[in-house]
Amino acid sequence: MKSVLTVENVSAAYRKNEVLTDVSFQIKQGTLTSIVGPNGAGKSTLLKVLLDLHPSITGKVTFFGEKYKTAKSKIGYVPQRGSVDWDFPTNALDVVTMGQYGKIGWLKWPQKEHKQKALAALREMKMEGFANRQISQLSGGQQQRVFLARALAQDADLYFLDEPLAGVDATTEKAIMETLKMLKESGKTVMVVHHDLQTVEEYFDHVLLLNKTVIAHGPTNLTFTRENIRKAYGGTLHWMGEKR
Amino acid sequence: MFSFLSYNAQSVLFSTFLLGMAAGAIGSFAYWKRQSLMSDALSHAALPGVVLGFMIIGEKNLFVMIIGAAVTALLGAFFIQWIRSSSRVKEDAAMGIVLSVFFGLGIMLLTFANRMPGGNQSGLDSFIFGQAASMVSKDVWTMMIVALIVLFITVLLFKEWKIFLFDPSFAKGLGISITKMNALYMAILVLVIVVGIQAVGVILMAALLIIPSVSARYWTESFKVMVILSALFGGSAGMVGTLLSTFGKGWPTGPFIVVTASSVFLVSLFLGSKKGLAVVFFQQKRQRKRMALLEMTKEIEQ
Image 1 (cartoon, each protein chain N blue to C red):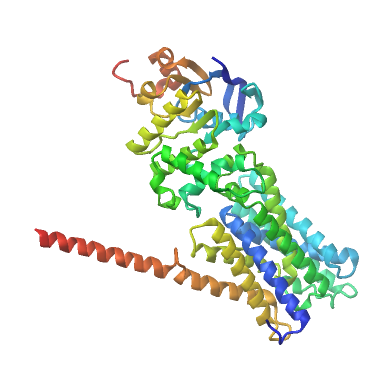
Image 2 (tube, each protein chain N blue to C red):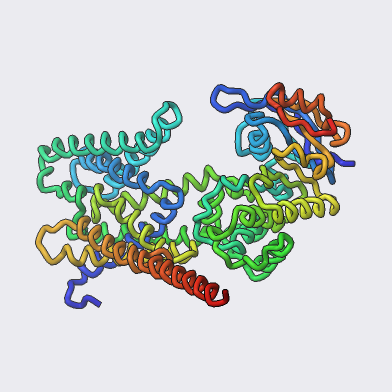
């Protein structure tokens, strides 16, 4: 299978603290990968570096064999829910329509077709009943679903999600995972920063264990082993599944 | 309209209306960038530039003074960024430092300029509190054209502004350069400030940027409507304030504009249809009534 993302020797820092050291991996098309690691392991930073939101010191990142700049339209990004101000005066449909702005182009206004596409994306996330709801009036899980719907409206080939399941209700978790599986089945590639070790095996076919650098990466059943997890988490891990 | 006023006074009124609209629109951007205070720091930082512009040429030339104002305002913005990123000082403190230092510097230069030949009659003092009456036709035209350009950019790039303000990291993924949008935002903010200070004054210019957008927030849950309302509030505050200041000889314009804008704010605070105190009060009252009714039906059923 084709590799859609290649990361070679990437390092990054905040001020003087190096948070990512010599990170290298490849992601194959049609995979659903979770990025797992302890707090401060650089999971979110990795996404930000890949998406050119945070500078890297060294290293090379290519998407579909191209640089980020030219591959941008094929990449969808779902930031952490807390990264925006939900008091912003707008409704769910409007936020999802933003996913289409790249297709609308400069100096033009969204048309009916764009709104319809946005509505379809909301329906996908079982949120069509909330289209005209103020975003400040949505629950955390609903806000997360709106964010994912926006990424769906982008119609990308490679998706990055930053902690989409953090603090959401069970309905949302189910809706999000169903959508991610559907994306995968239609040949898209998904990478998710994930924090819940207990659901890794159930939800993801690939796992990338990260702690400043790649500890292990591969199919979940081969990679998500007790030894690798311990390597990633060091002595800080108290939880261990019964199987292990 | 206002046929009792001279043509000159009418055009001044119209120009402060347009200026208020531009300030209201860009002010609502500043509101969502959480940079309302930044606009205050920038307008104070414009004063030394105005005076320096006068001192270099030796006469009151609006164009040169505007350039001077833009230079020191941008310098102020640069200092704020620099202090914040290179030291442990937080942004609010950095703004406080830049605001007072630049303003103090401006006042100091002003006392020197007033001693220069012709300095006393230059009307430079009017830049502190604003004096719309001191504007000549060229000033009026400059203000109108700049305000129209700003409004045009606001409308033209509306959806880009919206996504840039709501979620900049997502905007970047769509190919909207955050750096360029920031630069454009800063440029039009400084532009509005520097053309506005002659009419409104460096001290109170920020009020015309901040108050209309805060007032508009009470009336709507739509960003588009908020920007339009903010522009209208700013425009009417600019016009009405200017009109009031013409009733007395030598009355400064800035304070009247601010008082007008604050009256709009007070009305919005209490009567605003979305977040106004009265609306919230009645909503809560209705809620309580409904709860009480529910309790009652439960008791009856038992």
